[in-house]
Image (cartoon, rainbow, N blue to C red; front, side, top):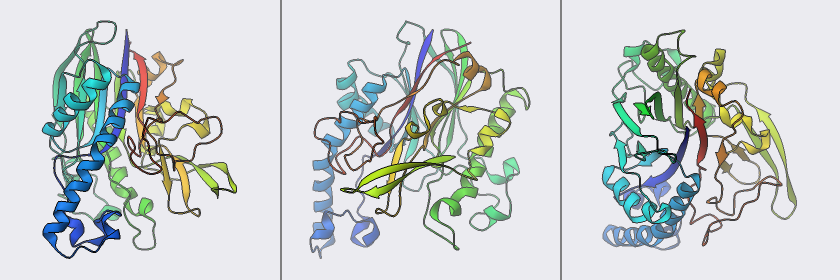
Length: 369
């Protein structure tokens, strides 16, 4: 009874325009920076035209990446609202896939930009097993006080009654062909700007660690601490952190070589500690686990995994011979692929944009015990 589960950060599936770039140069698109725009009204018209002109190609590629993942259950990040999700599913995804995702779930979370996590599900798996939602719960309102997670590191940027999840942890209790399966969909705190001598990843690490601890606490409260290993659950989403990376050394023209590095500390150690869950992407070769290319010039460029499917020990063991797929055809041409990983990009893919997303979909075929 195979179930295809996927996660994908589609990047800014929005129904609104962001006009803040007129007053904040850091948020102004690079195209408009080429022109002198003195009127806010003119700026708004230009920004609307720019976004509309670029969106169609981008969303066609996003839909192609999802079509290639061919998932029965699709966990999404950076969705504006249900209206945006419905318009995308009907106008783009349905046309690419040929049959749609009729079950759609989204709960407004905490992100200041309004981007949420969402889930799309078919009514049946490809072999005809019914996919049923028994219950859905948002944990967006959970605070540090609720889970007794507040500490000195968090006190530097947060208060004890602040919400733990910067977006949400969306919990779904499902039956797949009558078999229970629990799904936890997240989008952890983004890596911010450097602060107090720490880089953007390190300065925001305590926030992501608290989010990971909260997810683990939710699962342990559900099944009982010490009794989770035998259950069927998955934690999926963009976790904005990594336990390893591939440094890309060199520059265009001179060539590149790739160095695998293991991080000494990660928020995701909360999941891997004592084998609470398995990051199944690590079943792939070390240079072939990445889902995002990061670059700030030749001096700082690496490939890393930000997008995850973590499986419970029982579910991982039941699928011991299976390896997840990573869909990279929607990556822009600026993304540097290690040798042997090159793919055929989607039509009209650009050097930096249009693209499906900076992130790659991760998908795995699972048998439920």
